[in-house]
Image 1 (cartoon, rainbow, N blue to C red):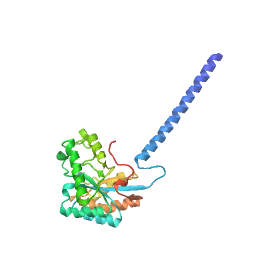
Image 2: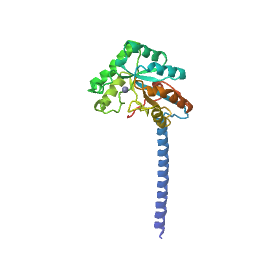
Image 3: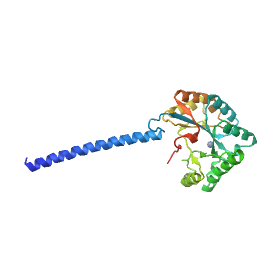
Length: 254
Ligand SMILES: [Zn+2]
């Protein structure tokens, strides 16, 4: 091999080695980035490993709300209730007042909870949110900060105007909240075991699980399961807080 060819070969080998090393470093960086972003989505930040569970109850107030509040009080747990405005009649007003007085958070679910009415148009959806927002201010002097859209923010009814509605509620100082754990207690015929298993299979994935349950007259099984849910989460090292205290809002889509 001539001298020129030797130099060419050595240079080529060196370039190939350098490329392999750079690719390896890039892959390593990608790995680190993915680990970090995974940590962020779980609510981890740096060395902060505190775990907080957010119990959320949709569709109240109901004839069972007082029972939920009794258990939460005994267990020293704060939760978030996403309410239906038209259910807050004079009897139910007392129980909503108790939710507020006992340190729970009140959020906007809907005024009417009728998909055809709420999601008929962008305007009807916005009006439904604002109607219960105004009601909570008027009836309880309560400044609600959170909205949980019926069927969640990724529901098909809302998709034609989803971005606009989210912009509109943000302009009113509101944030929307979905969930990352569901008790599946409003579908089919839930049992205490099915509720516990649905929560159990997902909460461990998150340092800040947002757990969807329902406070409606037909969800006696959720009430029966509540003590066991709290006990298990406590034993797994979770604290409890109201949803506004979460590091980031819980969104299905961004
Ligand atoms: Zn609902």
